[in-house]
Image (cartoon, rainbow, N blue to C red):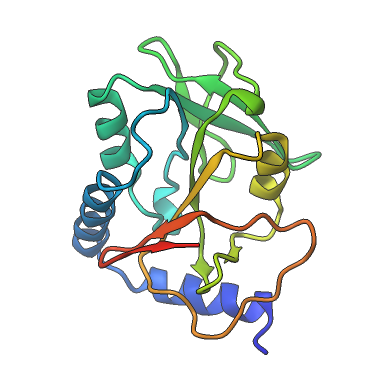
Length: 188
């Protein structure tokens, strides 16, 4: 079985080879597939703001869809002391700045509890056919998803198809309900 650190290294390497055009094209394809999910009757949607330097899926396209559907968009600020996230409603007045890790974050605003969030879009490095996922390894999203309601819909976004072998998972890992790649949406 491949270890989480090995998979992290492999997918960071694969992502580092993607051109800006490929990232944009695949991000648009992912956003278009998101439109087909049965999630659009909800109100509160959590969205990550892409770390450009990490060549993450560009979440601007999802942001535009959510905005066009007049949904409440919630973004987070990271606390690297306890690896927690604080969530804020994204408004026209929200000031976004990159932190020292190049993560775009709200500076302040209207706080929203994790228990009010109905749909979460999750950045990840790799996932498997069972809905297990690997991120950067700090556990921010596992802690956050543990605070959400059990019926919160968890949607991963990935430039790559799932790993064929199962990803090692811990009891603290929270799986996905869906994962969208540029070619297909996986349901778990």
